[in-house]
Image (cartoon, rainbow, N blue to C red):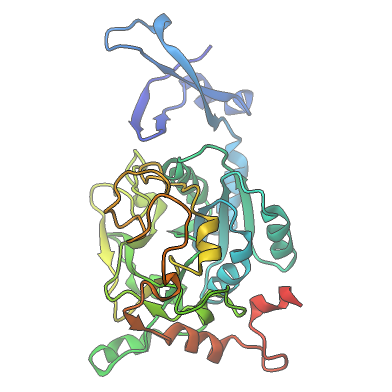
Length: 362
């Protein structure tokens, strides 16, 4: 048995250096699963350690070198999902148009046909891969895992949910200088990241606007971007696009952002340049489907009577899956049709009048 000391341990992530014998001859250790030894108390001896299995295993670095030799993707996205297959086509096709080149989907025990949806997208040349992640409420660890997985393939990786969509407001006179960057438009997200990158920026944070049911009682036929048009006044939270090589060795994150290595900083994207439309409070039929479980470690499930005043919960919603009065009119302070108008102006097929994600409904 080969042993080595842990370098860092945070959340559910333990990082260790390779034993010297493996460093000298890594091919002999190919496929070996790594086990973590945890002491029951501070002064415990080695033979007293409890052994805990992990998802880590030794891999052949040659395949990673081959990936590096092909060149990296400029912009990738990682997400973790549970039973959200119906939202995939719109989310992936829209953001691919904005410049996302590679998708890492961490599947947290979905049973709604997500494998088939991803296979269809792969056949249509979308660069999507599904990774089984069965552990409940371990989103932070999953994102750490994805950051490592993407490091050799991607210069930048966005971490976001399938109900979140980037949008670029048209510049006002005050922000005319951003017009030269060439967005909004095709590949505009990749262009934005490239233009806001620097040697010291390790993370780009974008504010999220939360949208409500917008008066609807049934899911919008043209998708969330065209259907939901009323939101809360003030932004809630943010989501981040990170440089994997700028992350702290612990890979510590709080879903919305990561801890960065010394010498790197984060940049807050001006809301006049980019925002994320978060279609958080959809029609009751859709919202109720995700009521029973949430993937983040430190966020209480909807039916648990914990942190009821938190922004992670729906205001006015209790702990039971009972539709509140006037749900369709809730979370509506500002009518905001900008992304809907942008999508209909740029992505509708002139021959069919359909948006790209509507084809699957034919």
